[in-house]
Image (cartoon, rainbow, N blue to C red; front, side, top):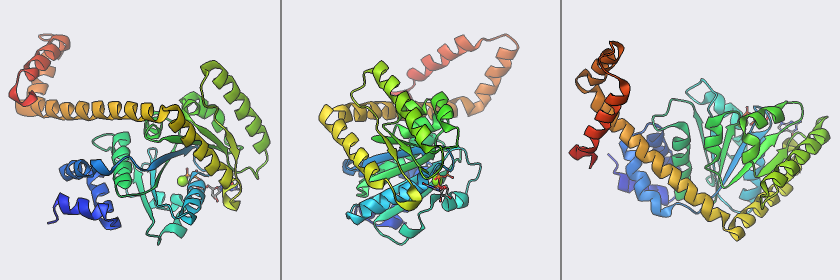
Length: 323
Ligand SMILES: Nc1nc2c(ncn2[C@@H]2O[C@H](COP(=O)(O)OP(=O)(O)OP(=O)(O)O)[C@@H](O)[C@H]2O)c(=O)[nH]1
Ligand SMILES: [Mg+2]
């Protein structure tokens, strides 16, 4: 049996097998994952975390592939996490097909992981975050998170990233959808992919005017650029990477990066505590069928949930386990 200490050492030495193992533990909420992440913690915080979101088929994976290629040519190592919250599949075979990363498969400088919804115990965003952190600690210079962007889950996942790119393509009706879902508001860079298709110019104009309105209202110090790309022909990739670089500079120069990271740590720490308490309470209430008895009493109006909640919380605070 390998110890978490040994595994951590192997991750830090760059072993992809060790990294894959830690990630599997993270996904399965194996208690050893927390131990490893604890040991890896001092080594985190160096990677540039890039989020790519957008409608299905907009070209996220093709762009991830091109961006990866760009950085690999400059000797930077890349980690890729493809998350598909909407996928009902659990294995990831379908995701594998959708990642379009085959040309990087044998490259030791690229580590790819796909994740489908599995009702992760700790929540999808939290799990993704820990997977990204493990990649970061393993020394990857850039970690790219790709997810299909439509709902709250995806917005939560995207908050992990330092720079968020929203990938749009003509003919997807996705601009309206993204606006509704609030994905538009969180993007730092807009990409009009499939610029070889009809309607790209119109989409470009629409997005630009929408951004102009937005930045005027918010008086934000960063005006998100709109970059046109054709991922399949490698067009616009340099512009996109340049925009990412400019956003990184702006984040650092304005100090916004520190504020962003602080807020992220605040949220994550709070969520971890929330989840740990939730698990403790769940276990406690399941004991001796206490919750079921409580439900019976509430149904019969002999008890009310408000009072019961106060009593249970009060009791919990005063138990030695909670202290
Ligand atoms: N014409 C054209 N086709 C593109 C472009 N970018 C991607 N495609 C094609 O569009 C299809 C979908 O591309 P993907 O990169 O898989 O898109 P995705 O957003 O990752 O898709 P999902 O992960 O399934 O949501 C593929 O057949 C690509 O070859 C582009 O710029 N122009
Ligand atoms: Mg994809």
